[in-house]
Length: 289
Ligand code: ZN
Ligand code: FE
Ligand code: FE
Image (cartoon, rainbow, N blue to C red; front, side, top):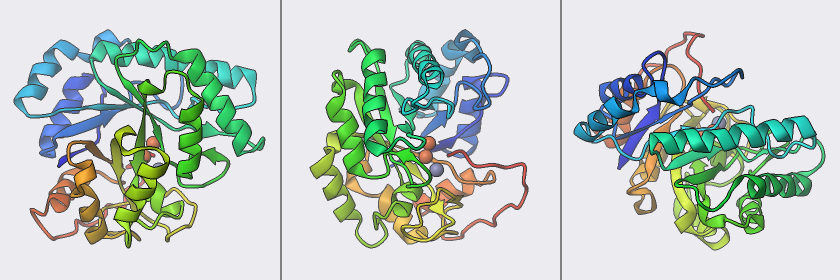
């Protein structure tokens, strides 16, 4: 299994991400290349790509993932929000191609009241404006928890977006255990059933990345509240079955859990220990979505 976490790129860029990943004994990692609070992006040339790549090789860190800024909402009915999303995502594709990474994970979007069907059409319209077919990466739509007006809670919605995009060979999907369970997919009691439905609707060849999170809220709660591994409604046994499932064998599996427990949580998922680490209560530690 290829396990990693959402790591920092503060100051030294990829060198920081790699250092942090090594400290967790990780096999992969995920970063955000720009702040979710907006503002101009840090130049990607400042991420120390050329120094980081040999380090990654030496430490068996492979298939890194970039998560797109939350501020992008291609489902928005507002022209300025939609246009901002087009610009940021277009720029992000160039940035990630510069790094040589193969995966961008993005939230499909929020329809903000106009309805799921309009949201789906809008997202596809945006992706059709952005994708040329020459991209050297996969844009992976993340499955959502079913909260608010988000698009992509149901696999049917993900499939519909893909069907409307011209260069669909550039599209992938990122599942998220917390989101899927909250959206009403019972991956605790019927994981094989979930992958079967995924294959029927989307196709397992589209599945590129998985986010591995426990959930603070119950099954089908339609809430997006990540919990530490073994401390939520999914539980350790179910999450171990996910990370050991053959469908995910060679895929980057990324933790986005609260509070800086990534190292112990990765060891726990690998089965190197059965001890569930103590939660940290510090408010400063916030989970990525
Ligand atoms: Zn989430
Ligand atoms: Fe996400
Ligand atoms: Fe996620």
